[in-house]
Length: 91
Image (cartoon, rainbow, N blue to C red; front, side, top):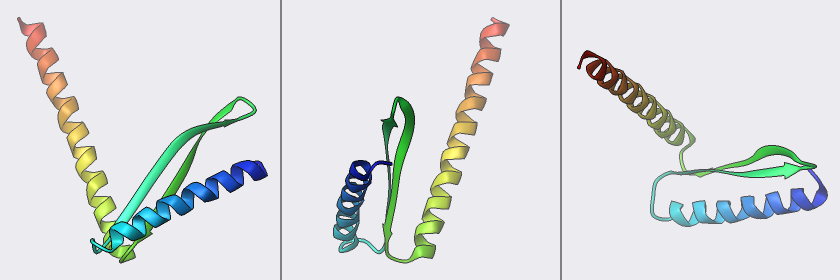
């Protein structure tokens, strides 16, 4: 990253950190994951930030549970679509 990009990245990280701290005044744990597309010399990539406050293990556990629930939702939705296709083929 260029110096300008580094400064902007750090500015955005500070903004996210401030919001996490504000939310942390009302919640036991806060974890913010943020991304945005960016490019250098036409090369596309994604900038990412992750900022958390509160108990690290509680945040990790919550994130793990969320990922597992999302994966299960995707599997159930895929299964439902397959069943719908099978039903359509039978009629």
